[in-house]
Length: 266
Image (cartoon, helix red, strand yellow):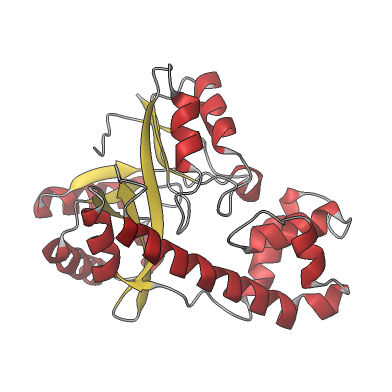
């Protein structure tokens, strides 16, 4: 089967609408996909509606900015109730923090360099609730300061030289709201934690005790050997295996659209 349980839309930092994601799934005959926008579920209803009447397994999801101790991690929630009050309260708080982070980064490191204002960013995004670096880049692209999305990776690298993402929720809180919304809890892209194997396994055990359901073993930056390691960890800890391409559309041009394998998360 063809699948990706980790996809982003224009409701966070992707460039495709939820409807476009479904259309891509139709064109490439993808069997199962999950919409997992950063800290928002605002695109899920349109995503599910667009898939109605198709044979595509669509999973309502989210990717929550989280931390365990001092380590920043991303937590995927699958099969969630997008109307759950506790979930929405946490996501709204994180989205507000994301916007503050984006505005701070823009005003301190970008605005003066390019002679560009936050008001100009807003002019292209009047209906948005949350703002990400992709929204800043998109606005500057439309106003001729960049030539194409192939320059976006360099733009992000430039911003991250000065300030890293700091906003996050404790994993206990992220796990709690996902569980309260009827969802399953998965750890996204464990390699990006940049830990030793022993440290990774220790984190997995801690999260298992907190209610972790699975690990995203298959990810574009995981080598085959690393995928095997994460599968082994899942087997050892009785966790489910997931996989996702972290699709962002034009904002991440090198990501594959789907994986092939027998992987199910709900």
